[in-house]
Amino acid sequence: IKVVKECSKDIYAKIDSQLMREALINLLENAIKYGVDNSTVILSVKRKSNKILIDIENKGEVIPEKERDRIFNRFYRVDKSRSKKTGGTGLGLAIVKHIIDAHNENIYVQSTVGIGSEFSFSLKKSKVL
Image 1 (tube, rainbow, N blue to C red):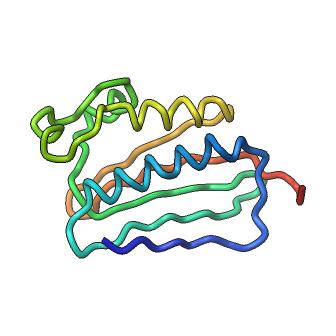
Image 2 (tube, rainbow, N blue to C red):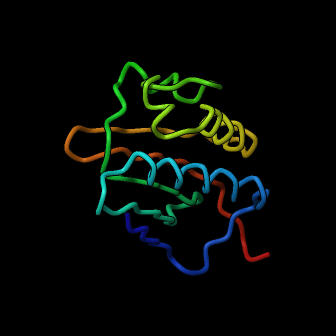
């Protein structure tokens, strides 16, 4: 799986860099783990008025709509049988949600058959530090 970064230059946000790094690593690892072989994972960072929008999208397994609210719960797995195949504890997305909450923002997920899944959140834009 190829990872592509689409990021405008000169984007600044007031964040806890260690926590944000952990959140992005968890999201990218999941996008790769559940992506289709020979596909692309896209990490996109864009400016929009007073916010910075971050999206991670893959071409892969669809997350059923009824499961989307629960995937951020600790130890929750959409498909329990996948835990043996893909590994993991079911904590990654719970950690991501906690980190985004700590930045006073929300995380969203969209998942569409034939397209894939997209996790997105925003951060408050700041001036150059």
